[in-house]
Length: 77
Image 1: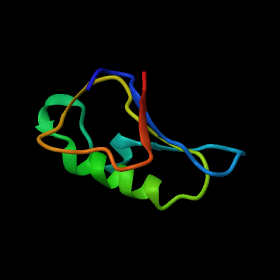
Image 2: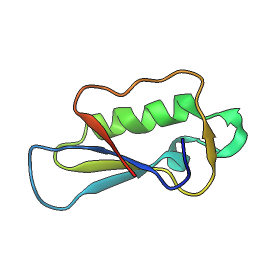
Image 3: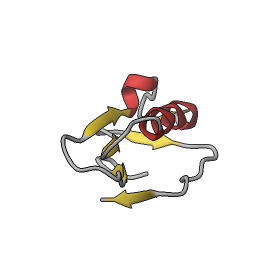
Image 4: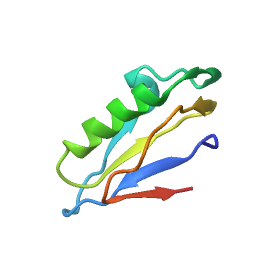
């Protein structure tokens, strides 16, 4: 995944958007560690949130062994 990308969930409600940073869930972004489990935890937290929400990736190289976007998720550069 390229650095600085954000994956956004399209919410049914308008208002303040909640953001989740993958590093807060344990992702390292060092290009060596498998950040997949931490990224999945961030997505799970986002899916449990009502309203507009985004999952953000700060600078770094995030390695993911295997993951899939859930229905209703869109990738935004």
